[in-house]
Image 1 (spheres, one colour):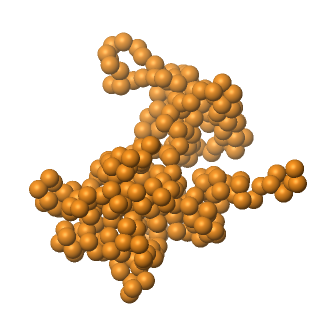
Image 2 (cartoon, rainbow, N blue to C red):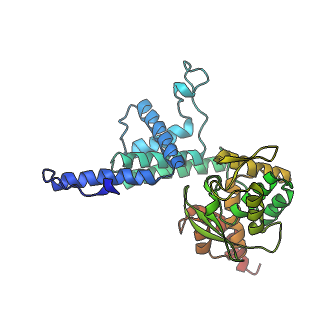
Image 3 (cartoon, rainbow, N blue to C red):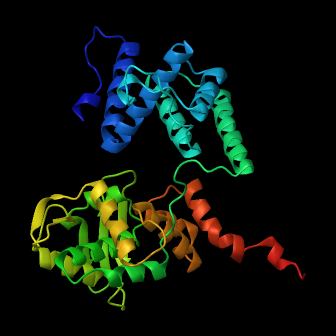
Length: 344
């Protein structure tokens, strides 16, 4: 990392050297972020700048009023920029944002402020998060849902149904392999889109070793072999790889109607569309997305008795993750319920 090497010019003071090293470190850390994360942060920062311009406050404001006002501004429906409007000359406001959207925008704004070396008062950020919590509670009391809501989880029964419904074609073999590898590694669509053939390695007769190198969370996992041919990831992977004749490059690729395999990897959107079609073929009553696999894995693993730390490691969640806790609670609220101990 040559750009992180200490500055040795004698004319540069120790404080200047430290400042230069800090700048180089910030560039280095930013360079490690996935492109999708950087793009999302850039979009969030642009929305924050729109807000501060409309409010008539400096862009680097980080007070209680500024951050809480941002939440309220989004809650009421932000003013769209000319390039976002149907008719650029006509002012237009967006629909009130969903709580999940505000959460993402606020996270991005705070990241942007810190990137610009703004020291954010913890009380200011707490006030903004409290405002968001109050918004969620008001919507719940009024029975209003904004946004798409949480993805419906894929159950083991649903996974089996989707696997069985995959057609007996090369594209069907690819879809089955994506499902049966994606579920036990709690894959996001971007994880499957970025997998390489060499990231999926058979291990004796035990299963597959899978490495997620690119995306929001990375890590190494193993996927055990299954006896059921409908749900065995090893058979599914070998059927797809041998049928496609691929030994390197992207693991999952486009297959045209004539059975020709493309060279480039599927896009994240392409993966999501394939998962959705797999759910439709199986007759599932909800749209399947990448997050359906991820939440389904966590919930079903907990239901089968897996430890929460083991689930976190397999799915590349940070230990103690709030999102993972919510999935686990779906099971624990029934299995470990204080009311269940009462002899009523």
